[in-house]
Image (cartoon, rainbow, N blue to C red):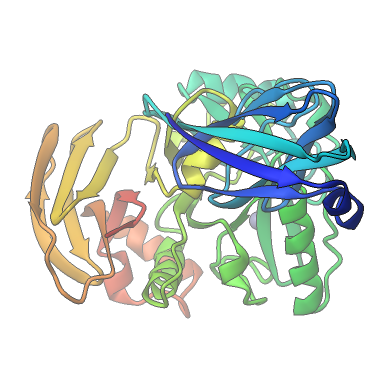
Length: 426
Ligand SMILES: [Zn+2]
């Protein structure tokens, strides 16, 4: 843990001019908590204490405390836990009483790094009878547990009526803002966002509302599977992540991947996530084909703790992989210096493809755990990524072509993706 100490002197005149000074400090990526300690002399002064992150107020303890700790999952009473977005944060001071000789305030700030990262698997996009599915929250939770998932985000359309009924550990609060020209999922507890949007300026405002409410926003299924499904509002740079894979891969998901890659090529660092978009049926057990159930696809997130905010922090950091099912494959991809490391586990089958930007730089059969590294020295590659692919059976290819003839070229349906990693940057 790193600790930084700041010393400030305030005269009575300073306190009259600005009674609420702040001490700015930088929170780097990979931060899971902050501890702030305050002392001041002389003791006859009263200096209040608080905390704000780049979004706004995170807590205030006035003169009641001389220290506080805020982490992703917990906080000293008076403070709000949550994701630490990198950037400029502030220790807030309140110069309630400054004696004639002035006051010297010492603030020390300790940053807690994210440690012991481990993979958790879940589904970031499912529906219940709180919107247009038949099944209940109980049925969705049972189905998700049956598949071995660690979490399921309930993203009912244009409502948060389900939020008070979630357990907060397995079923996580979300809402799918469903407009007539595209959808996005906002993760986190309420408030309900406006969805009756008819112009891009309104969408922009709602995205700002979501950011202020500290929701994590994911642009959903930018594919023309239904007349209102594709995203027509632009503003992609405002999102925290992109749903690159929604439901079964052959359902036009290569169009979402192409859109994602186009955004990466523009320099946007959008993490990739997936979601089954399962509309849970009112039946138990769920006897549908596994590829239609919750958890197909599964999103893997490398996290520093079990709280949902750890999950959101992992997504924001781009530590994600999407796989066809909870059995994987899981691709763990990282860059260390000029070396690209890969570690692929889970149900074997297919071929691992490693890319430098758009260029394929290595292929390897995935017939069992696969681990290795290779030089990442392509001068033009802004990012690296990986996929596991397998042939798509001809009858599936024909079905997709017959359903969406205008959107399917023959080369789109020769293979299916079994897993894809987020991009990693130098
Ligand atoms: Zn949708």
